Structure formats: structure tokens, C-alpha cells
Length: 148
Image 1 (cartoon, rainbow, N blue to C red):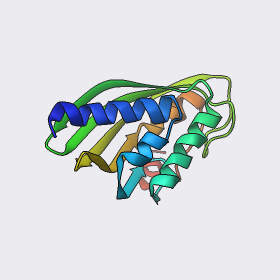
Image 2: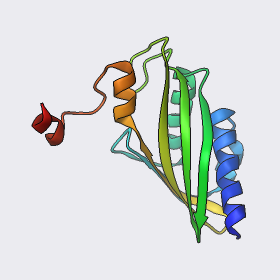
Image 3: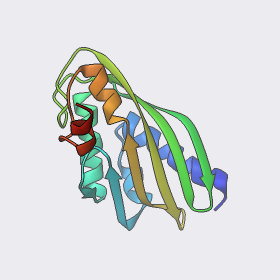
């Protein structure tokens, strides 16, 4: 598969799953042992748990927009840089409901094998969300304790 095709797989899946809530094509586009890791949780999610995770976001943020800002590909790896934006109208994870529109970036690393998504790992700017809402979403860390 070409680098451009890997980018197309990622771009299409971001649009269909996060922005449109369409998951059937995602189910057809992953390997059986697909997994997802994110900085929002310590858990490693399988496909159905990943879909539920997206649905939780879409339910809590009805005006959610996930915009692909940049995408790069080399070999079987794709890096995407996206911006999430919207108001959290229902509590989400540790994020309280608010009418305030928030925006936070995320960087994801996708592995594509045999024209399918093997895994996905996402780093979200949780401290940016905390600053925008004035809340603490993470557990007390050693670094936070040292700085206080």
C-alpha cells in the first residue's frame, strides 16, 4: 500500500467514526486483534470498546468536530494531528458538563497492515482541557506535587 493510501484510510476513518458516528466501515477496516490506547485512560481498548469510547464523546459533545490538521506517513505508520472542539453538555470521563466550547489537540499514531488498521495510540492534551475548564482531570502526579 502506498503512503497516500494509508493516509486516506486514516482520514476516512476519522471522518466516518468521530465526525459522523458511522462504525460499520471501521469494523471492516481493522485487523481482528486491533487495539486502542489513549492518555484519557490506562486501559487498552479493543474495537468495540473503542467504538463505545467514541460514542461517549459524541453523546457528551453533540456539536463535536474533529478536524484533521496534519497527517504524515512512513512505511506502515501514520501520524495524525487533530483538533477536537465542542461543548461538553453531559459529564464525560472526569470532564464536567459546561456550555463552554473547548478545543484540544491530539496526536495519534496508527499502524496499517494489509490495508487494515492494526492499532491506534492517541496522546491528548489533557492539561489544556484542565486549563480551559478549571478542573483537575488527572490523578495527583509526582510532578504536580513537586510544583505545588
